[in-house]
Image 1 (cartoon, one colour):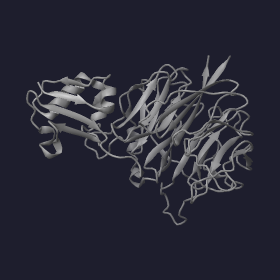
Image 2: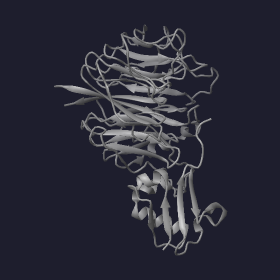
Image 3: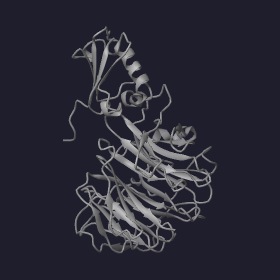
Image 4: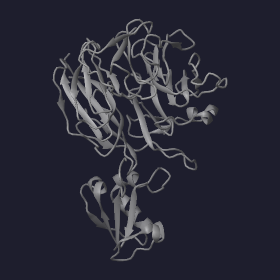
Length: 92
Length: 359
């Protein structure tokens, strides 16, 4: 199964879980499985209309999904999806 | 009955709680909570004596409302307010959380950005958009102020839970007398920032609107420019700015036991800092007819206090508290006459709420 790795505050919110394996064939499916297992993350990842939050970066096997097929990016056994918060600076 | 105070201090980097007994002589600080989130507001629910609510507006991970059922010792995130599907609005911040009327013990109200009013019927666990306000045709006139477009003031009548006013920046005052079934604009008497503003415009930049907790119908308000008083029988706002050093400012508070007394912290309109010779709390004892400058113990410094930055407790003599942009919290236990510093070196203080906690 694909594996999800949680980083930063997402890990804290998930009670310290660093990673988990999920039955999914795409990034979208992996995120759905993640929030089913960790409901506290649902509103941290998406707004009320289902859009991914700003400051959330998703990488499949080290590649930013924005350069792949976004949430439709295919995931296979052994693939890794990294959830990384806030790849940005603060105030000037 | 012995009571204590918990000062809920919201900063740009989390919530700090300072606790004291009724003497308010010494304060014990907590570790920060939600330190990655700007805390626009935190409030205590005096109806159950245990609940607290926090508006945690993290830029990443999205905003969230957190609730404590043990007076701030542990917290949990609750279901977010949500705008209707198909619209162009996304819940981005909570500006204010107000426990409802004593006669409605499970009702809690939240004002948000984009500006809207949400109601909870389960003590803050879940939220519903108040569509009657959202459907106002004048909502099309609402525009953001410098800090965004928020509904930040929720003023509930002391006697009648069906009577409530809300303040919007920039969108004026709306009042309901039928439990939020219908609303009416309530801006009569408020001076337009631009003298030739169109008739009927709601473009008033409300900064803080308060209802007296005991005297039904009495309201007090700080607008972008000017301070206003509203007697229960009046049909328009009375401007009471004369005597203050500057018409600008955000923070306002009303004395919970004495309906003739209120407080403001004026700022210089251009710099948005306390005008020379420095920070001062201005007090009226006569419903805004005159103002007195209270500064004993305060530094002669141009400090800044925001709209949620001034609060009172419910003790006698009254305790008064304010927080500053440079991370200080100041307290008075003699109704503003003299001041001592509770904390310094905090992050930028966005909000202060004084919870008067029963034993």
